[in-house]
Amino acid sequence: MLAPIQSLAQFPYVVVRVACGMCPNRSGTYRLARLAAKYGPETPLDEVLARISADCPYQHGPRRPGDREPGQYVPRCHAYFADLDRVVPPPPDLPPALMRPRLVK
Image (tube, helix red, strand yellow):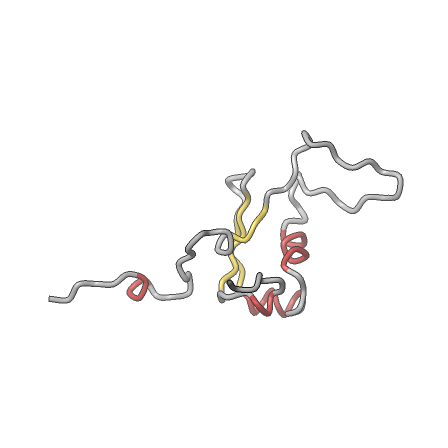
C-alpha cells in the first residue's frame, strides 16, 4: 500500500485539479510548480485546499474562543483534489495518444 500524499512535494501529477462536490460550477486547474512556488513545497495539501477555496461561501473561517462548533446541518465546503479521489486515476499529464492503446494493422 502506498503512503498517503500529504504535501505538494509528494503530489504525483504536474497539473493539480480542484473540484467541489457541492458547487458544480466551482472547479480549477493549477500548475504544481506555481502552487509550490506560491505556498511552499512542504505545505500540507489540506492547507493548500483551504487557501484555494478561501472565497467559497460555505468555507468557515477561523473560529474565536467561545464560538460554537457549526451544526451538522450547516453547509460546508466540499472542495477536493479531483485526481486524488478517483479509484484508478488516469494520468492527466500524458498526451491523448498515450492514454489508450491503439490497434495498428
